[in-house]
Image (tube, rainbow, N blue to C red; front, side):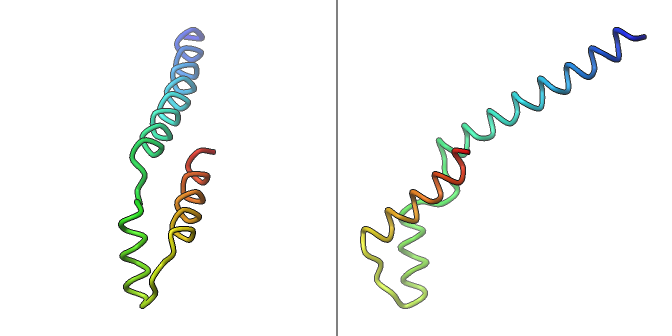
Length: 67
């Protein structure tokens, strides 16, 4: 019974860290927002974004998901 309990705890810990790693990798490879979406949001607000603004926003998004 003790081995089953220890095995379940170890399995949950391994599963947690593995799923967290895979989720972060997926977000890094396929970010939820891209430059085209940022441009569209700026245009909806009536502004024309500069390339520097777009790059700054993309960097902040990438930094958020790389932690």
